[in-house]
Image 1: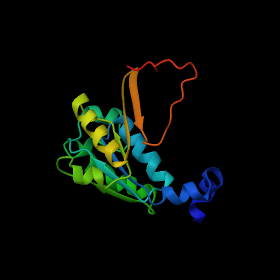
Image 2: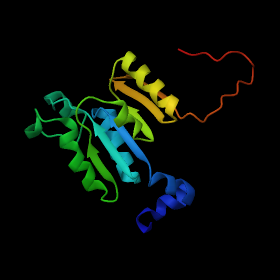
Image 3: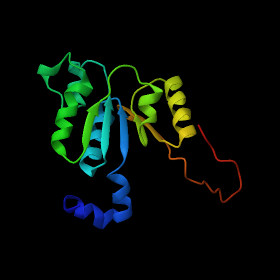
Length: 167
């Protein structure tokens, strides 16, 4: 725990104890996905799983700082996993290949999706919610972006009693 002493001071021992056993799945390793993977790996969860089978393109080099021109054509997750692992040897960083399955998603405590169409996002959000898995979906497209989170344990209290505005 010496390595995480500053985080223990900031988060507390109980939170840090939960973090070091956390299993996170990150789907999509473009800008938001790789930044999330980097920050999470540095924080020290038990496991970070990466899912992004898409081949690296020249365009990816502008948003994913781990990718290089010589890696164009290789799978993003395969290229990024060893580089993320170098950031923190206390974290297990692994690639999840193939199609995203319920078995894979269900083996995690939190899922961060940075890719997918609305139908896929709704499907995985419902799947995670029903199983008590935290679900985060976010993406940035230039100056426009969105974030959605469902941690299954929050209560919204509206002081006016009116129905909340949702979009």
